[in-house]
Image (cartoon, rainbow, N blue to C red; front, side, top):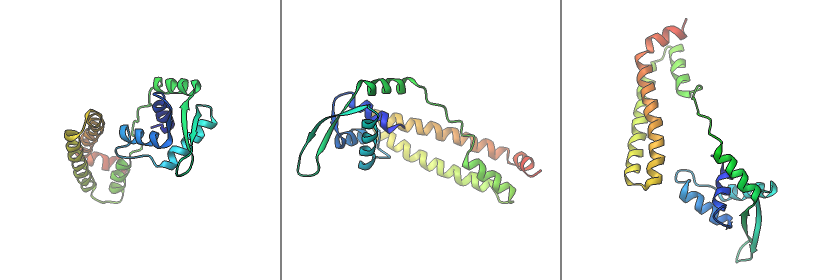
Length: 174
């Protein structure tokens, strides 16, 4: 995810302080990975340097000065371009799991055990996500669906690989 573009998009609704941006980001997108304050301020510094935001005001308080940031026209254009650009699908052609299976076969270990252990871990993750989805709001449900669909695809691959282990062993140990 592009944190810079996400913060720019949040600024389109109006100027905000770094603290407010972090809170809005965490509320909408950061359930599993909240932003660190340092990440917000370093990103805002870079966006300011690149002319995508401007300082809309500075407030003195009990602590350090609080800058209020506003998006510029260049920032709006940048967000529009980012939103219109499709994400490259991730084909997972360099899968760590595939590497583990092949290495197990090459070193005469039980690749079936690796697949079984991974299947159990996937099912455990799916139970957690399903519970979270059941209790969550619409945004959480959609994020969980996305993750669950990927895990389901992984499970299909695990089953297919388990069914083809003998053929894979013959192919990689020639």
